Length: 261
Ligand SMILES: NC(=O)c1ccc[n+]([C@@H]2O[C@H](COP(=O)([O-])OP(=O)(O)OC[C@H]3O[C@@H](n4cnc5c(N)ncnc54)[C@H](OP(=O)(O)O)[C@@H]3O)[C@@H](O)[C@H]2O)c1
Image (cartoon, rainbow, N blue to C red; front, side):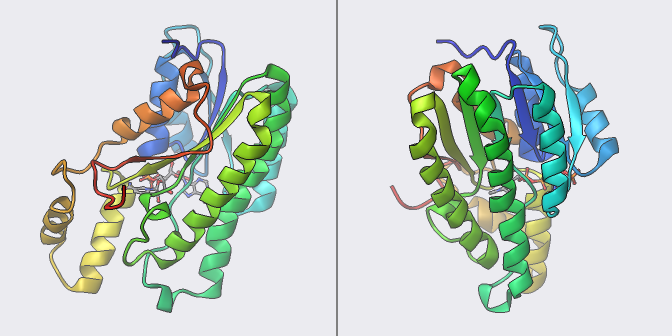
């Protein structure tokens, strides 16, 4: 089975911590040259320094805030001017939590920009290069809410479904060029995002974060939260030559938590 990414260029977004950073580490270990993209330059520098260079890989970063369309366009246009990206990992921070009845119009607009418009700008920019290479992997990190809406994540549930639909449509159009488009749906994964969700929800429910955490773990058949590396491993498989006939799908990495089949 060929899972080597040697010589390939991978753009990994939202990659200074959490699932994005774990993904960059795995892709680098498999030989990819990684380009990290996020907002915080210090964190980007530190993250790049931690990636494997054992196969002669060269890693770098671009700064962009995905809530600003212009920043994404500038960063990706600079990048594709001299680099053919084979692997694009669309990822960014999660939308604001809260019940849908309390969501502001601006909450939907900013989540749509950051998740769907951001993915679209990046994908459109890298697809010509992928066509020329005859190899492309676009992987979107979304959420299991694509399968079952989650409580207290009104805006997120709404926008995630739009991203999944966008991705399926895109996969239908680019499959004939050997470009695959897939979604990875993390369940409860130990990252800063999960810690902040637990703290916010505990506040709303007026419960102790530790009790809430225990209740959450009880909903997972594997009886524990996931690790960012466990999500990254699935992403890495989808990015590899071995996943050549997998497209248009959404894969859950959630310890069995999502109730539907
Ligand atoms: N962790 C979970 O349990 C879980 C479950 C389901 C779905 N998810 C989803 O999976 C994705 C990744 O989650 P995570 O837990 O790894 O998140 P995380 O630990 O909060 O990391 C988010 C990453 O995205 C970057 N980022 C945030 N806002 C950005 C912006 N406006 N523009 C560009 N980059 C931005 C951050 O770097 P900078 O701050 O430097 O920009 C960071 O590298 C999110 O969409 C999340 O909602 C997570």
